[in-house]
Image (cartoon, rainbow, N blue to C red; front, side, top):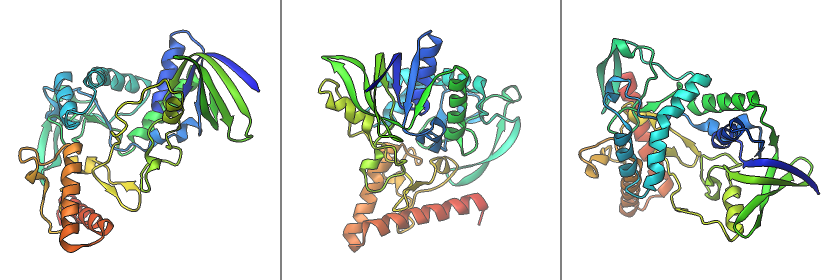
Length: 344
C-alpha cells in the first residue's frame, strides 16, 4: 500500500477545508487536501444568499456589532447552539469577509443615495450615507435585528469557493481529487491520518499526518428529499464515529431551510423573505405573526415549528397528502413574492 507523509491532512475540499489548509500553509507547515471532487465542484458553491457579518455599513445595519449578532444567533437557534462557538463565529465573521474581499470576492457594495427595498411586503425607499459609498453592503435575511448578510448577487458561495480555491493554488497546496477517506488511523486518542480510496482506480492509499482535520460538510443525503449534493453523505462524520474515540455533538441539529421545495429538492433563497416575500398557508393566511407577533419575518427555528404545525393542521383537517399541502403553501408564497416584486 502506498504511503504519503505530511504535516497536516485536511479531509474535505470545500470552503472550510481550503481555508484550514491555507492557514496551515501560512503557518509554515506542509498540508494536503483530500476531496471527493475538484474543489471548485464542492457543495459550498451552492450557497446563494450570503454570509453574515456585523459590518454595519448599510442604512438598516447601522449600530450593528458582534454582541447584537451573537444575540440574534443564540435566539435564532432557540437557545440550542453552542454559545462559545457562536461567539467565535460572530467575532471572526467581519474579519473573514474583509479578508475575502482582499482576496478577490466581489461583495455587493453600498451605493450612495436612495434605493427601493421591499420590507414586510411593502416597497420603501431607504437612503444610504455618502461616507458609506463603496463599502461592503448587506441585505436583509429573516429573523435578524440588523441587515448583515453580505452577498455577491445570487452566487455568493460560488464566488467565495472559486476565490478560496485560487488562493490555495497560489499557496501551492496540493489537492488530491477523487479521493475518499474510508477510515482514520489512530492509536488511542491520537489520530495519525487516514486510509483513503482512490475513486478512479480503487487503490487504497495511506496518509500519515501529525494533525488531521475533517471538513467534509453535512449529511443531508441521509434524507429522501434534500438540496444537498450527492457527495454530502456524512462520511467524515461516520469515520470519526467509527473510531470509538471521537464524540459527535448535536447530531439532531440538521439545518432545515424554511423555503425548500418538495419534492424537487431545490431552494428558494432565504433572501426572498428578506426582500419582502410572505409565508402563507393554504387559506392565504400569513401565519408567522401567530407565533412571533413582534417579528413577522421570523428566525428559522421558529419558522420550522410554525410551518410544520400549520402543515400538519391542514393535513388533519382535510386528510390531504403532506406533499401537496406543503407545495400549496410554497406556491402561495412564491405567488406573493411575484406580487411584491412586480406590483401586480
